[in-house]
Amino acid sequence: MMLKKMTAALLAAATMLSVGLVSCGDSSSSSGSSTSDSQSAGEAKDVSAVADELKNGIEFKDSLNEIDPAVSEKLYKLTADDYKSAKIYIGSGGATAEEIACIEAKDADGVSKIEDAVKNRIEDLKTTFKDYVPEEMDKLNDPVIVIKGNSVYMCLSNDNAKAKEIIG
Amino acid sequence: MAEQKTPSPAARARNQQNVISLFCMLAGVAVFAWMIMTATGLKKTDSSVTALSDESSSAVEVQKSDDSVPKDENSSGTGEQLFGDDSSEEDPNKKTSDFSDACFIGDSRTVGLSYNSGKPLATFYCATGLNVSSALDENNIELDNGSMGNVKDALAQKQFKRIYIMFGINEVGWPYIDSFKEEYKELIEAVKTAQPDATVYVQSIIPVTASKDAEGMPFTNENIATFNQAIQEVCTSCGVTYLDVGAALVDENGCLPEDAASDGIHMVKEYLVKWIEFLEQNT
Image (cartoon, rainbow over all chains, first blue to last red; front, side, top):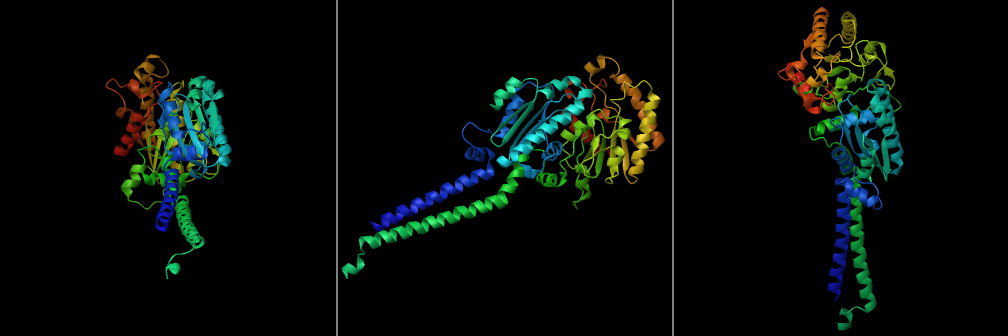
């Protein structure tokens, strides 16, 4: 009888240990899992997945490409310590102002810095395009910026309705 | 004897509680240790890896990218400036291929190269709309300290082994080609003075697509060829190397292929990579 109870206790402890290890493992290997753990249902989606969906679901004039983190950190004036994960698609440099930036802050306190970075990037683009390709100012004056949980989603395109639908 | 071997119900309960407590403590310690390990080691790696979704970049580049990010966050403006990190003591061949010893100066086409060439360690002093005149006269480049400066100010910050200059697409509408030549010459001389030990390469103006050419002046390939002839003369006069980059990118008709640029001028990634590959192979 005592042996049975000890076995049961052992099993319970092992189960606790396994659950603990699995949940920790997820948070270090997948931002998506971590986000769903820390956010309530229906909040922030995985930034990488949303960025891909925006790129593939919207008809852009320019050819958008994912840029290296070193480049995106410079453009958005962020450091690697400012965010947990990010995916940024950018165009050819001068044809259009089309751009996608989906950035997840490390915590709730970091969201406002990401939001400011995104807004400053748009201001930089306005300075660039106001004389160079003035028609791009329509996108820049009406950008889609959505904040959900710890994530900031920005899309500069000709289809704001679709962008909002994808971001959700 | 039998009574001594059989513990009382209270003693059994205490034993069971002790065993359960022991295993719960062990489990808690194990979970805590795992969380500490995750927070200190794995998570740091994760932030870089998650950010680096571009499969073309190596882990070494990610590490260096963190180092290359300037700390000043109060700056603004349109000039693009990506600082290379030349602190590594790696073999010269690798240094050459990552362009960490190189500086690119130019207009929106060079901005596109900075975004999409896959060379985050190269330095770019470029801005959309920049031309041979404004490069020296206007403050369009973000400097190390976060303020804005011209190309000369930017070049004063660091010495490079190679300088690649490309201007002209914004100037092909200029009415006097001699003014272009004079301004370009002044710019090249300023670059040579600021970077006395660097090899200076001046790149040709890359032609436009046939459809852009068909729209007429100023963006015709005939006009671009005229300006490229002027650039070659300036290069000879200044004693710097002229690079016909366009030759590596155009089709059999001398035009940029239609799929190379959505607006006929600014190239997509595939052609920007061809451009950087040309430089890798020819300089």
